[in-house]
Length: 76
Image (cartoon, rainbow, N blue to C red; front, side, top):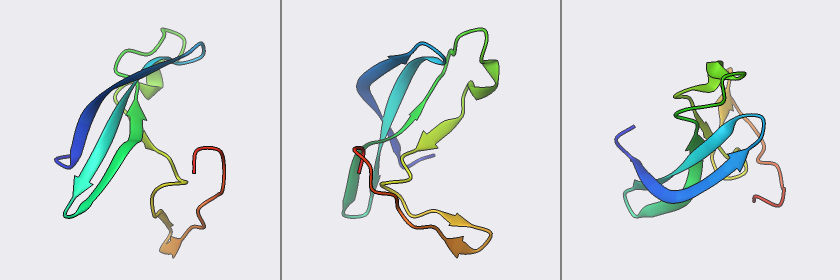
């Protein structure tokens, strides 16, 4: 969490609400708007409040000890 830097970028989803974005700086690496969260989601979707999501196109994910393949999408 100490590596996350808030961004001014915002987006709105009709199913989740207003998203805030985060960048990450670690050593010599900087990844702009690599993660997002909903600090105040719509009432119909309260379970996502405070969770942080990362673009799996931009990070290395390990699931059950296995590195996943990064998908190629418009967000890559």
